[in-house]
Image (cartoon, rainbow, N blue to C red; front, side, top):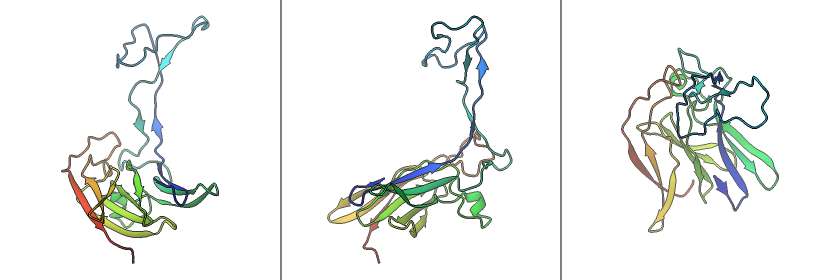
Length: 205
């Protein structure tokens, strides 16, 4: 999200190590996705005995099988505010929580499965939703949490801000594949209902 007036950009990032396995393309190799380029088309002038490898198999995230958590020190996702006028980082904070840890009183981990982007308003608020079922508003100058609201499901979409009859509104889609508490990153997503939730924005106090 960009504030062109103040010259700032707000970025959601996450750390999720993945495992990708290379395998040799033996004579019996069959390409799983025929729509993609054929990796057997070798570059010219390869040496004799050259064995091509492929990594087209689906990759898996490196997680603990029992908890589904990454082997990295949290936060696993963050929001960073960059000051483009000075080329510096203005602030950086964890992006939400991981629900299974928040239930045990452990906060500030950042959402493990964060996917959503954010919006910044003319009133100086940065809005973003996370899979921990919460929509939050941060002060764009400091990163301080101004407001948060728990909704009925995970949030993986980007909030939409619009004006109607002189009033500003924010709409967000709630309800998406639930992966935060899965035992494995590759576990089937648990279905949840979906709905649009709209908030009317008032003046900051």
